[in-house]
Length: 547
Image 1: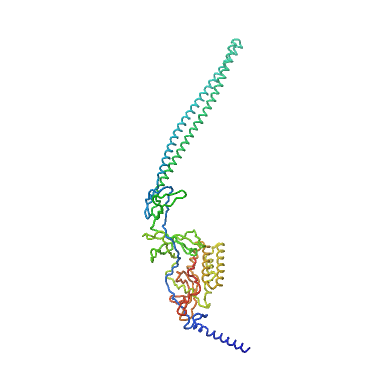
Image 2 (image 1 turned 120 degrees about the vertical axis):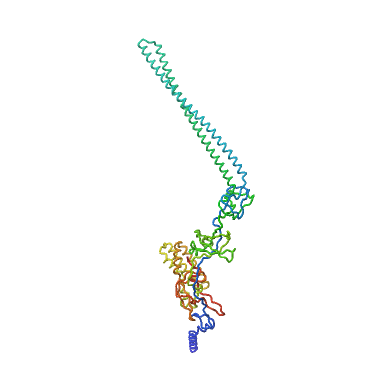
């Protein structure tokens, strides 16, 4: 039994040594994978492409809607029935030109009633003014009566002084024996009468003054009635003007020079403007220049700036590429199903009037352009040899997005503590997602792509527009790291570290690295039957670009 076990061990050791020395050729002959790359003759052979120079244009794809620069909705501020339609679809109109009229019978009746009320208020002013004049005359008469009564008091006082003097003289004569008693007594009676007349005169003065106060109050009341009549006249005049304004609103006019792109009413239709003005016409100010409102994902919005060229196509003119230019990025974000997008406004010349409002445009917003760049196919950046050889996928940019985050932190020393905390949190989330993807080989590429997309979105959201522009400029000049495999004279592929720049989805710019035009880089390998092997790994650049 021991001899049998020893023999078995010797046999297995011999097989192991044989596989060590001859395993690769045998695996190649059987078309089996074996560490070490290409096999001997008859095995999988690398498929290559040449490094060359040419243009590389990075662009953001989007769709949008063609719209006029200015579209004014013309409504009615007055309810009523459409009596006349003076404009139709595609009618060119000028500012102030009538486009429709409402029936005005009711408004004209209200205007006649308002005019009569105004005339009545004007007559009431005249009546009030006459009353005020009479009250003023009465006040003047009362003042004269007061003056007359005061003169009577003065006369009575003089008479009283005279009577008192006469009384004293007769009393002295009587005492001296020269005057009669009867004269002294009568003189006393005269004095008492003078006192009574003085009291009466003073009472008359008080009465006249009271009459004067009453007359002055009546005069002030009359003046107030005049002012009230004038206020009523002003109110009636305002009501008449309001009716005239309504009458003017019955004629609906174009507020701008332009062309009617929409008519929403017909002749005889009743317009109800109780709660809001109904839209009767839509008038475009100018169709010689249009705008495209494009929807762009938040991961790409950091790469877009005003002034960038935008080639686009519309279904109405297949095969023809039109051009526009980015005008602005609207700050109002829209979130649909947790997807955040922004509206990018693109101005487009439309001299021939070929573009019509509402057309759907497919755009490519050119974010970067290299006229004479050293470039390689994107497949060359994705290909890795089997078996985890030197420079394999492990040498690709860090799965956790460390290179991206390090570049942001290096280029932006002015980050706030809150921004740094958000970027570090995004990096930690990326690492967790990468760890989860490594435990699930199936769908690993899709999971890594989603994780990188999430990292880019969070970093973009943490930065302001000026910071995103600075990082984009730095990335364009320095590039990101990558690896290509060069095939030379049948030798095993050699890993060449490079710095990559912009990409158009097919080819990628090489910013720096030991590459020259004409060199052959591996983009895949052939399988049995001539079928091409799929490139392994995920693109270090590709379409998942930041800023």
